[in-house]
Each structure stands twice: as C-alpha cells, then as structure tokens.
Image (tube, rainbow, N blue to C red; front, top):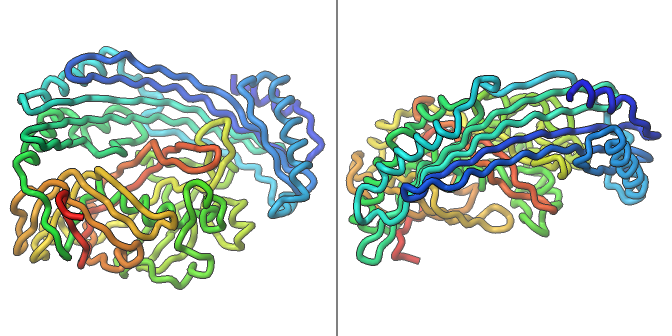
Length: 479
C-alpha cells in the first residue's frame, strides 16, 4: 500500500508553491481485568491522511479518510482553496518558508517483534488482579494494558519521503483501599502511567509482575499513616513525580505558540516572554533540561517532526539559564527565534502544532542515599495524584499518592496525602540536588491535551530524583 500511495501522491495535480501528504495508520488493543473480572477488549484501527498546501503566501490543509487517488486529490484541492483564502490574513508569508524534502526512516525498538496474544495479556493481568485483592479493605483494583502500533508516512512535492514506524506498550495497575471513612489509592505510576516505545520487555524494567500485591500493601499502609505535616521544608521528588513537575512547569510554558498567544482561549498563556531567552534564570545551576527525541525507548522519540524537520537533541535550559523555546518551523518564523523539531499532530485529521515531545532533565551526581542523608527535615514524595496550575503555568499545587518523612538524614514514617505548592521559576531556583543516572526513569503520558480543536498526544519525560529546598508542604487536612 505504501508504494501505491507514493505513486498516487506523485500523480496529484496542484498549482501551488508546495504541498505535502501526511498519512497515519494506527492500531490499538486495550485489555483490563477489574476485581478479577475480565473486561471486553477494546480494538481500534484508524487510518487517514492530511494534505497541506502553501499557495499565494497562505497555508491551507484538509484531511480525508479516503486515501484513494481521487480522495487525495479532492483533499488537495480543498487545501489549496483554503490556502489562497487565508493568504490575506496570514501572520507570515508561507511562500518564504523553505520547501522541505526530508528523506529518512525511523523505527521503535522491537517494532517487528511478534506481539503477545490476547490470552498472554489476560493471563498476566488476571494474576496481578488476583494478587491485588488480598485484603477485605481493598475495595477496588484493576490491571490494564494498551498496546499500539503506528505507521506514519510524510511525502512532499519537493521530493520528501519519510517513513516512521512505532510500537508502544502502556501498562497500568491501580489499587484502592478503604477503612474508617478514609480511602487511599496506589497506582503503578499515577494518571500518566508507564508508557514507552518498544516491546513487552519494558514490563521487567518497571517491575510490573508483582505490582498488584506491592501496591495493595502500600495502599493499606497509607490507611494507617498520619497526614503529611504542614510547613516549609525540603522535598525529595522521585522520578514519577518529577515528570509531572517538568511537564507542567517547564514543558507547557516553553511551547512557543503558547508564548505567542495562540493557546490563550483554551490551554492558556505562559509566564515566559520572548525577551527571556538567552538570559532568564529559570532555575539553579543544577537545572539542565533538553528536548531529546533520540532516546529509543522514550514515548515521543522520532527522526522527523510532522512538518519534516529533522529531530535532534537540544538544550532548552542549561545551568539554569533559559536558552530556547519549544517551537516548530512556523512559530520560529513568527518569533524570530531558533526552536526545535516539535511540530506534531495527534492524528491524521489534526494539523501539527507546537508540542513538547521528550523533555528530559539531565542527571547529576547525587546518589539517592546522599540526597536523603543531606536532608534534616523533609518529605520524600512519589507518584502524582493531583495537579493544578494557573493559566500562565506559573503558580502550581501538586499532590502525591505516597509520602515518607525524612528526619536527620533518614527515611522514617510513611505519611499520606502529601502536597506541595510553589511558583515555577522560584521552585526550580531552589533545586539543590540532582540524582545520578542510576536514579533516572524514562516515563511518559499518552494523554497530553492542547489545541482547538483538541489534540491528545504522546509525550515522554526522563528524570532523576531531585531535592528542592524551602518548599511549602501540606497534608490532606490543611488548606
């Protein structure tokens, strides 16, 4: 079908400066066992194409699920008419942009490896479910997984041809305990879950086998634990909470279209302004954050973005200083700033917009034991349970599932409902320790929302454990 598609595209007719086709073909399978009862499988096949045209200085696009030559030509004609209609009101001259002709390929790890059967998945999930329901106080539990394969093809009138093939595995486990009017939930990695490219071997990396009983034990511990104390203290965030902190208070604020005002009606603006790049102190000298689409197992790794820009690792923040935004080719032209290859669409029927992809905090040199030993009074927090951040991605309040006191350099009592709040740049300036590579985890979310009409896209984050000083901490019984 790919060769036929290429032939059909080359035969399309369009009186325009440039046009492109972006085809996506995705297949997903989701399985779940809830309270030892197998749920019906969810199976999805989705295929279609987006045609984009630059003509008369404007840009237009049209999508179609009819990928025959006639269907593609019809969409191309609509896109061309939209481009000409939009030209008088365009923010930039699209005719001045380069006409990309990228050529290359990308493949996830184990993309061609035989996948597990439905029976394999249900057997594994059933065992974890059985282990989770180990106590009368466990009132709800569920083991889940989604697997997905995708093939993306990008063709341009200038001769571009990119084929990118993906495979994703996204397991989850949730256990809820209740007693004496209190309810506590432990999950494998919070709302964002475990999500990586590649095959089923990622289950071993995250200890999925045995997670049902382990999380049940931890949920029961939380029922008996006191609330997190209130006060200003050090906080040690483990990677599964760090990824939320990076996502909300670095990733979204640095999206260039948001900085330019495009997202203010829906997802909000940003406290970051164009004049901050190159000089603004975003965090302490220990803060080094990269856009990195090159790590094979990370959820949003790729070789080219959806406008054909080659994807390379780039520093966004280096030694605490803000260097560059998350902006694709169009936003770069509007802002006059260098960006990255992050113009991405969540499907064939949405246009690419500026999206974070893999946003990673580079490791430091501290061991986990060193970080704990260096804290006189603080709290270790793990696994995000709630998040709230203002429209400019500045003031935030986050909660975690699991807390543990650190007193005089030692981990002590478990505490429940640990929460903390702050202001983005002030918080990152109080970064005092960054964990070594051994503390790092590669995580992600398939559920990052943005755009009008809405797009829900896959995003990856890798982070070590980190320590922050002078954090406003509170528990579930404090306001």
